[in-house]
Length: 166
Image 1 (cartoon, rainbow, N blue to C red):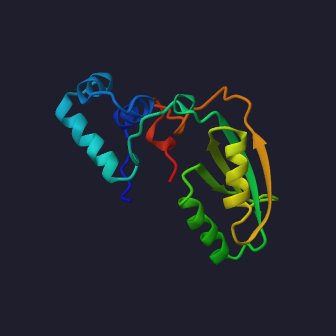
Image 2 (cartoon, rainbow, N blue to C red):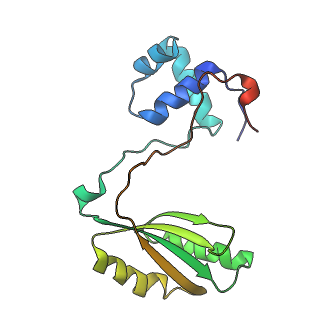
């Protein structure tokens, strides 16, 4: 990933695309205060530099009957690098697992899992997760509601270049 020195216009583009990835290039350019062709060049440069990883639609889970979200705290019997990677690779094949984070501390991994209902989650838990090799324990926490879901990172458009972190 090549690093690009971000100026105010780049940060504005990143903030606007993060808020609305479907924004047209013309609207994006207008908000950034530049014309469309250089705006498109900047977006492509930000993509090539790895600042923009992709574009996604935010799907309403309930509309597709995914009515349960569970956070599973997973402990492994072994934390050897090969075992950690093996678990991460296994999780890649489970579509119910929407996020997988390796943690420092008591829990090795935190998984965000969606299911149609509690019984559906229980089936996943018993046939896939706890049946997987190297699993020591799983603690499930049922999400009651989500009051904030804001993907990405906070972008301070007006920050100077000295505020950038390498």
